[in-house]
Length: 143
Image (cartoon, rainbow, N blue to C red; front, side, top):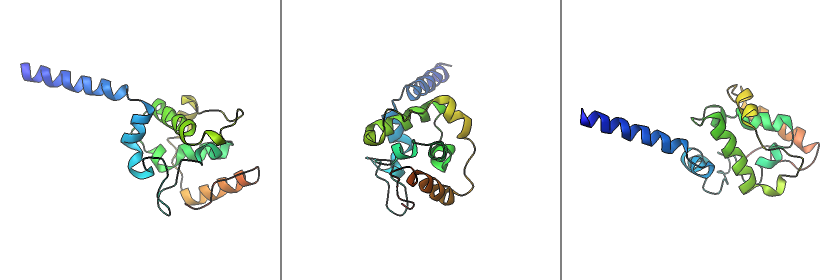
């Protein structure tokens, strides 16, 4: 009986620790493997988040795209954790593209669209980049 209690306590403490992870820790655990330590991506394979995430946050199409790409839509992170990670990324790696009129993500916004994965990520990206380019600086259409 003592071993079972100890295992239960260990599992509960592990879950509590995971719930208290910072956005930086969540990025490291769930995103860095693909997007890289500095959110730089892998040319031709994984899109960069550094120096681009703030650009996507400028309009609703770009925000919707970020929330529905497979890494976000299928992430094990809760809506609140994903919100925190995306905002941390934008503030840490793309502060130059965040003007005062670009709002940070909210958990309500994330939960309202993230579970609707994109049918074609590449086509959606091209369309979003086109819409961003029409109003200013935009990330490249391909990565």
